[in-house]
Amino acid sequence: MSLTSVSEVECRARRHLSEQNIMATPTRVAVVATVMRTDGWFDAEELLNRVREEHTRLSRATVYRLLPRLCNSGLLHMSEFGDGRHRYRRADPGENPSAEIYIIDCGRIIEREAPFLTWYGRTLVGRAGLELESQRLQVHARCSHKRQGGSCELCPHEATALPHPHTSRVGAVRRSG
Image (tube, rainbow, N blue to C red; front, top):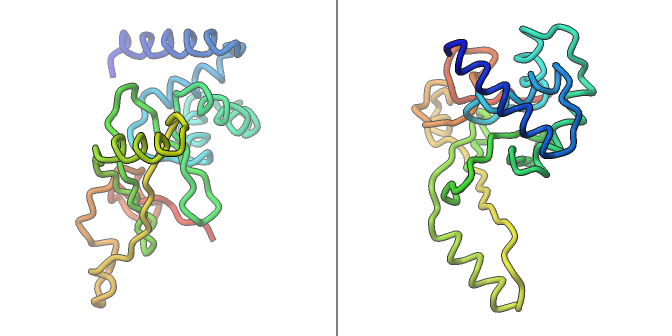
């Protein structure tokens, strides 16, 4: 990333914090700028570690307090996949609805476009006399390769998450416990 684009992202981060009436401290700007540059899913600890590479004084509390506010502002999308850990990804305005496929065996998260969700959600809430605010489709699946005795780590899952901490393979999410 060029210096121009780094400062451009930081300016956008400052602007976003200002629009949300959040004081734009250097560490908050660094957190928001990192979120704006991050593709795929991440958890709070992964974000904390990424930002601490350049801002060693960043507190864990800053990250954990800022994440819900970034979700409420529409910058982030948060999901929990049944393991008690919240994962986040940047929410892009105008993105098509997608299904989140959580692979239980390895913790990978795959997203697939699901354009039918808009129609289904509007139809469902419309029949109830309500207005659609948001929607998501989350599916939990098992790896067929692993079920056949293979290793899920070697599967060609097209994932959208961060690298697994025990491999260099992109797309796995660290599993807790």
